[in-house]
Image (cartoon, rainbow, N blue to C red; front, side, top):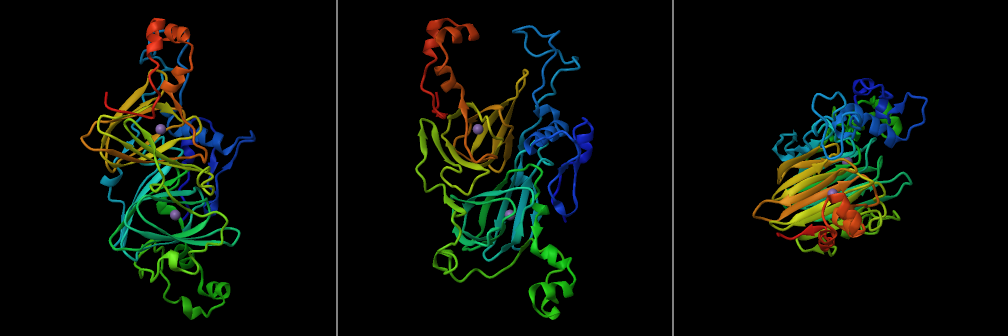
Length: 420
Ligand code: MN
Ligand code: MN
């Protein structure tokens, strides 16, 4: 089985270069002679799959300053913003005796081109089998319980790590890895992938490959008698039962002293947060966690009545998982478009690169959010911080207020504002 690729028909509808889905799940190749980066290609695919997420110029002949968006009958009027919320935990997903997996990709959340995510649960001893990904790196945050990962990199180096709540792992694209529940009790974690077309159900699993390979080839490949392979799984195991490891990684001779120069584990919740009047933010980018070259992760808490203030990310899309609480997420999409969604624990959301957004905690409890970005370097621009750096006279003219009022807008710029 190959990993899911973008649909070719979506590309052809706009004349964008078609993606050739090569056998064996290889990366899409560009048919166009025009040199395009993969990010350019992704943007084109995004335009095709969901024009609504791509800002489009409005018709100049009908537009006047201050008149708002053009009328709906205008052929060039932008499409309304689509839903950017998916009730991830309300889905059934893949269910096994040893564990479950639920995913949100561009298929479940149209327009979420840049990132996908999975909620996975493993019982004690359960194995998310040996596998790799052709299309995406894997970033993870452990919510409850304990698990152990193994990974093997292209330089022949390996690492075994134990994880508990608040810990993060990162596997670069193509690195071999596995996950196993350590118990006691279920281990629940969120996985975030830096490609919206990545499907957790289409990974490259070792049993998928061995079950498609003739026994004489397996015998020659591994240097073992053919009879050795008589009982291997017929078809992909994906999640299966296993024995809880006798020792944890810190006690294992092959686990405590990993031989890779960069560890795959980062203890995010063990870090001191950036405190705001209305909550906290922890961020882990490649600066703090060097192996995480392609992704940044974050953990936010917003107090009741608090506001994650208006901002955008110049260099990355954002995928969120709501761990706890109730919130109202608003996304500003240019061209007179904004959309607000009520979100609660178990929901996934997606905010395209450059789109303005803010989060209000509208519940009685703290709102907790795990977020992933598809860049190893974290960037954000806050609206309040920006206004502080604009001459008051300009701000006054732009907003139609007087200069004294413009000066009074200079309240402290905070990532999370307290209840007002
Ligand atoms: Mn994986
Ligand atoms: Mn954000």
